[in-house]
Length: 188
Image 1 (cartoon, helix red, strand yellow):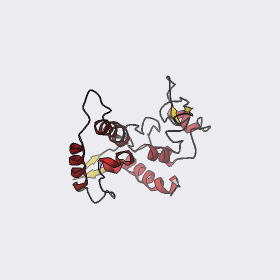
Image 2: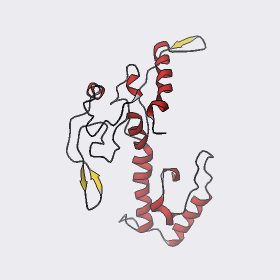
Image 3: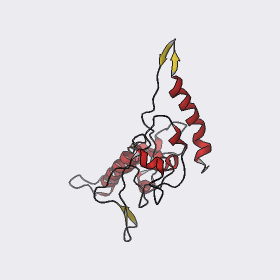
Image 4: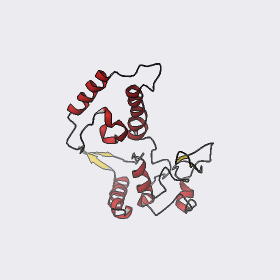
């Protein structure tokens, strides 16, 4: 569903109840606070109600405006920009280009909408980013001075990947190295 209200309102209601009352475990009262939400880039944009990371106003932490490179068809961000602020977000100061729709997360008590949503998900930064680039470099020889993997090495690694049994929660099977350019996050 695209309705963030339906998706998040029950969580916000429950969180505020726990934030107010705390919890008891074995007759011991424990106060709870929300430190941070961790989500991948599309999920962060969805729950926060903002532009996606690849939009000109897509940075969730600062006010930098991206530029589109028409040749590579990519958005890039250069320079340093002022940080976004919780109070400005709550007032709707970022509506032009950044804020797309309201989010129930603004109703969480004592929660900073800017600092409380992490930008460092390991799936995109490490696994799809660094790991995939390294595998491609070893497989096609683009990581000089490291040698390109031989055909036998690539076949052996591919066989190991294909035989790897993933948990039932992951709906896709591992694919051999010849499909590396098409790998998604579930391969990691």
